[in-house]
Length: 420
Image (cartoon, rainbow, N blue to C red; front, side, top):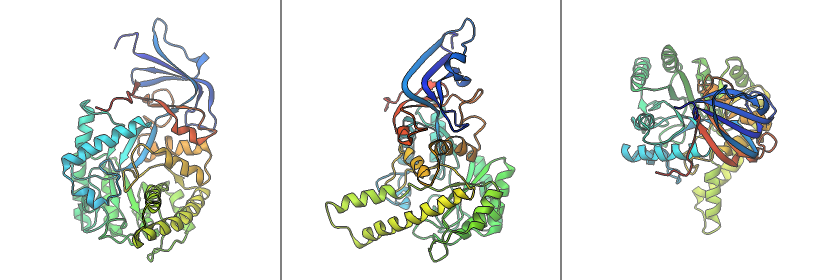
């Protein structure tokens, strides 16, 4: 790279670095190659003597860190089909779908994603293709196949393990395949042969999985759809919990503050996936306007409405109790399309976060959950130059975070019109 084009200077009315609560007026970022060199007021940013910088100037806009979605399923086909229906597709089709979903998410402003479970080696193949420059994508944090019990949640494309020895062996196998972390289904879920509100793995199995993963210097993520699932995961020293439903074995909600206390004490991140299900609700509501719904469909609408009200209440209490809530969409699942991560950020404001706090939950806090906060998540010297520029000021009006103007990844302006 020549001296003339190795530097980029990005200026805007405002800059939010995800380190505090306020946006900086007349902010600027100086980039050298793929890294941030300087951040601050534009009058204080100095291009090295004798060098030239390509300049970008944005009016009535805000510069933010690139968004970090800590929970996606790249092979998902968001047309309402269930996960086991996705799993019957060939690896080739699912790899192409993963590439499409990744590109859509990148173009929407998400520059880092953690994929929480895929079939066989589909996402590993995608990561290789991205590294070869074949297709664009956010920074990929990949687990490969999730760990499940026989017939448990995600067992249709996961590794089904029984007993401590198999659990340890399968962690080692995934590490051999290139896993960046290990995803565990600690309870049942939407999988038809699973039991959503009951634990799956025994505590000794969970402990073996997590201890073995930590030996490799990697982190763990557990799907938990019940209180006992969270307790078991906490006993095993989990790093991040997704969903985190306070549900009893009969499916009823019961907030348990002692679990929240443990989540805080053990510094466990929780990704509440609050928007998940809303797209299905909207699709069924739209359908009801043109034709009668089946009894099953109407029951899904009624259940979603009542469950979401309680979920909002419980997650609001979790936040008030000090639980570190991070932002992950769980797309593309059911009807939830990729490229709409900002909807999840809005739900964090709904549970009481300020706009700044919600943005931090989707940048630096999610980056910490993904164990990549040393390279992304804030705008500061030495970090990768992943930036999002939006029209308006999302620190005062969170809806402005949808107004994407440009995305930079590793210092390069992303061509958001390239659909090849």
